[in-house]
Length: 86
Image 1 (cartoon, rainbow, N blue to C red):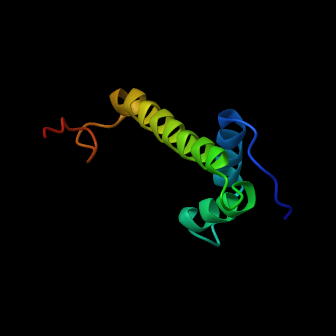
Image 2 (image 1 turned 180 degrees about the vertical axis):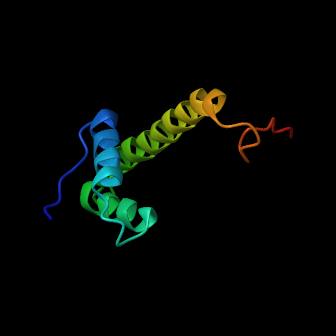
């Protein structure tokens, strides 16, 4: 695969989602993300690194929000259908 530099946070988010969707399950998601990172964040490029880190956090929050919005549809007694207290 060819290397290129992330040009925006949205571009980074796209690459992350694409990596998750196209992962053939022959490798872990961590390995897939590392492969993408190595391809799109050049060494010693703090701007591309910041874009990547921001995109990772954005994708994580989007996924958490999506999961939370699906909780009302879980069957009664589901392991995740409980109130978590800290």
